[in-house]
Length: 264
Image (cartoon, rainbow, N blue to C red; front, side, top):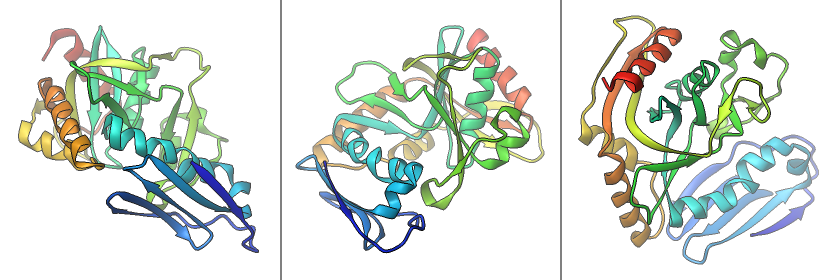
């Protein structure tokens, strides 16, 4: 990874980058003075940053410095899964859903209730593995500002930029009294979140083909790597799959507790 610093004549935080995939290149473009080009075949990244960008550390870290190595890890060596992960009663639960489905909120609510916290939004499987082991970042949780209404401990934390221009609040979990963390977990259940304003709260079966389609949509990289990622997802899809329809957060945590305890 090479980082080049340029003078841009502005102190304002640069805009949210736009990502374009033109294999083998993954291009991250904020503006003429802030962009990166990752060569997925050569496993190299060139980054151009303005002096304004490095004054906004959360922006620089989130959109450029952190994702530079991560894009190669996710595109060549691991299978990324857009899901949170928590563990209870020795059973791992992968919380799946699109952006805004409530993965981070429910992951953290479970952690506050005594579950082991693995990750809130991004899980990874090793491509050469033989099980359903996932790895995550257990050292932080990222929330949308609306989570302030649910978790008062977020009050006073900085609101930072996030992908697609959405603001987020980053909460470190290390150290945090009462929160048990783990970097890996074996997945027993895939649970797709359907958070609703009203309706009957229930846990129901979910179609395996629909789960497969959801899991495949974030994959990228060389063709041989994608083939390995497909194989890793098939291992993951041997877990039991459910949809959690809920409007009450406490009920959702309790229902998942029953799932890990009773298996249904």
